Image (cartoon, rainbow, N blue to C red; front, side, top):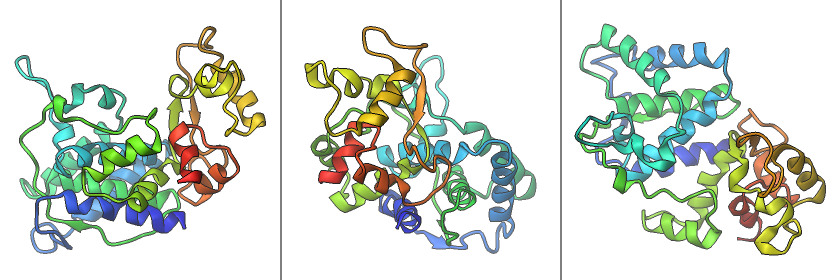
Length: 271
């Protein structure tokens, strides 16, 4: 289920792209494009498996705002801020992977492959390396020139299902597609600040969230502490406590066992 869900995750955001897409778009202009990107991703994945989550997050944060146009890559200037400066994007990682792939592509095929397509291909390759499906990714996207931090209206980690659904439907996505997209939480982490209240003082009750497995809550409490007595600065925990670096269906299985980390993830079991 999860392997197909990641495929759908990538396909769901394609309609947000203003371009004529096709498989093998660079077949005549840069036939080695996909293999070049794959080599860069493979090299990094061999030393850092967390890049799958990082690239999935970058891809989603880019596509949800103005479509998959790589506007998240545009740097700010002294006179104008960019999407990179928006709060949700301050912790986006993996830019150096895209930069490395772009450098290699420019050496082989100057001014040919868009950064938007590099993000798409790199994300696909990272998903495959993490156990997801190997599938044909469409290409032919154009890079955007506008990057405005005020347009970064991403659904937040503390959103309820109803709040998130409102944000997704505003982009033309359905509840099923939202659940599929959130399935990307099969990899990645969350900062304690976004769910610490669930561990000991849910909605001001001075008790843990009853929808969280008590054993998991006790375990996370040791990592995160309480709101009044947090541990460390702001540690992170895996969103999938079972197979944290693997693209599979365990995220969905975990929330059915009341082991969702974020409240919105756990609420999916009731959606």
